[in-house]
Amino acid sequence: MSLSSSQVLRSVADLYAAIRDVNPLVVQLTNFVVANDQANLTLALGASPIMSFSPEEQLDLGRITGALLVNIGTVSDIQSKTALLAGKAVNERHRPVILDPVGVGASSYRHQVVQELLAEWRPSIITGNAAEIAHIYGLTGLGRGVDSQQEHSDPARLVRDLALRERCVVVLHGATDWLSDGETVVKLSNGHVRLTTITGTGCSTGSAIAAFSAVATPPEAKEINLHDLLVASIAGVLATSIAGEIAAENSPNSGPASFRVAWIDAVSTLNPEIISERARIQVVSVV
Image (cartoon, rainbow, N blue to C red; front, side, top):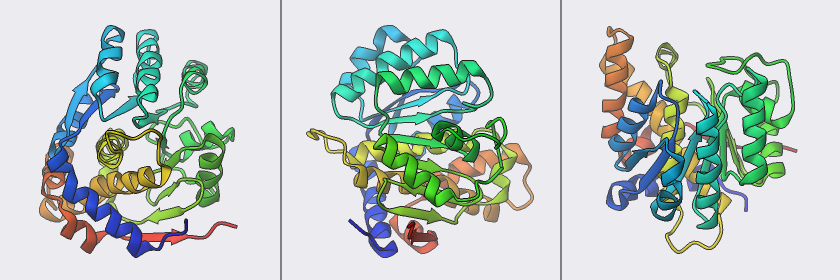
C-alpha cells in the first residue's frame, strides 16, 4: 500500500491525539546509562514505563505490557537472558517488540547476543544508527556503532531491504532519519545538532517508538501490522527530533545538562497540531 506524506502525517497526528488517553504500559529492558531519561520521556509522552531488569518477572510483565523495548547498551549475561525471556513472552501475545542493538559492531559479544535474540524471537521494529543497522544487515566499514554520526551511502535501500528480509520495521536514525516497513520508505528531516551533545537521545527515541507502538497495536490484535508500526515509529522519531528543535529555540544559551531538561520538557508539550506544523516528512521511492 503506497502512502503519501500527507496520509502518513494524518496517521501520526492521530497517535498523538490518542496516547495520553490510552496511557499504554511499556516494559523497557534497557541500559543503566540512559534509563532515567527514557522513563521520564515515556511519561512525558503520556505512557507508563516499567524499567525491568529481572528475568524472574518477564512472563508476568509480558502478559500486561503494551510493547517491549530491548536495548543492549550495557549488555550482560543476565540482561541477555532476561531479553530472551521477555521477547518470547511478548511475541506470544502479538505485541510489538522493539530491538535497539546499541553498539552491535563494537564487540563480538554484542554481535553474539543480538544473533541469539534474533534466532529466538522476532523483533517488530529494529532501530539504530547507520553503523548498527548496516551491521545487522551484514555490512562493514561504518565504525563501532556507539553514538555514530556516520552515514550510509544508500540509507533508503538499506532500511527497505533489511525490513523485507527481517519482516519488520527498520528505523535508521541520524542527521536524517530513514524508516521502512519493507514497502514504504520515509525520510524525516527534523532534529537539531544539539541533540548530539547529550548521550542517549537515540536510546530515548527507542522508548518513544515503543510507546507509540503500544498505542498503534489494538489489545485484541492477532498479528503484527507493519504499516501501523511504521506510523508509530515515525511518531516516535518525530517526538524526540521536534522536541530537540523546540528545546534549542527555548534555551539557546543553555549548556548540555539544561538542554537535556528542556528537551524532555518539550516532549511533554507535543500535540497533533505541533507535529503537523513542524514535521518534515517525505515518502521516497526505492527501485
